[in-house]
Length: 310
Image 1 (cartoon, one colour):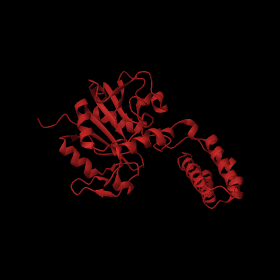
Image 2 (spheres, one colour):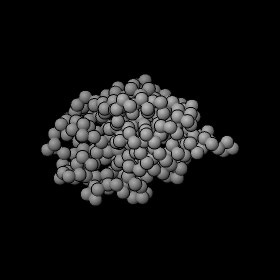
Image 3 (cartoon, rainbow, N blue to C red):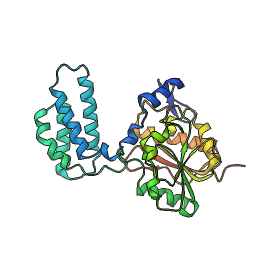
Image 4 (tube, one colour):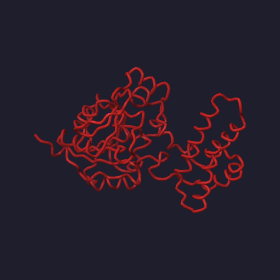
């Protein structure tokens, strides 16, 4: 599972990867739902969730004979901290109390935790835009997309990946035809058979049509590939399929040069130089310069095949 870097294009990928039957078991049985996507659901963020997690942590601190006590506490600390760091409240009192509380969690200071957790819960308002409790969709990102390709050219819009992290909500009151694409990928969550049982699929509006990427004859103006390309074992083959279906591709990917890490569940990690190489390889042009999504490590690449060499 060592990461190696391509000397030609800068793509970082796993030297050895999971066998398909193993990755399929992980994504369909052991972790059948996208944890990042599920975090965008209201019940996974907010005052109620914070209180529940903190209460569980305090109860678990009292236990002394639990074999998995340490691992369980570490997970609770991560979940509580995620909520606090993803809260949009900028009030100085909240920021100071948040810092103190996280320090108290990490040193198991029960007195400080008990004293402050109720007051702190009242200060948790809405999640920060682009945090894992929000997703990639925002008025800024959508505005960048529309201004780059011009609204009158966007008659059909498609996405592939996790719907919770996309931008369907920004076009639900428009006449743009909307599609959710499915691609049989052993390194991602669900396929056409199982998606119907997933919360992300059930969240789609009725006017979003679900189609199989390889079997349908639809053509689209735009396909959004959000935090998905990193899970694909043969990205060039995958991109060639997409380009047969659409003129524009919008790809959101964590840039290694910004994050300096590659997630264990990702087959690859991309850099600007990799996208430049791929664009040249597939005769694509950049519609606009790579757009950084807020203060995250993610970049939005908008590519156009209209100027492909004949």
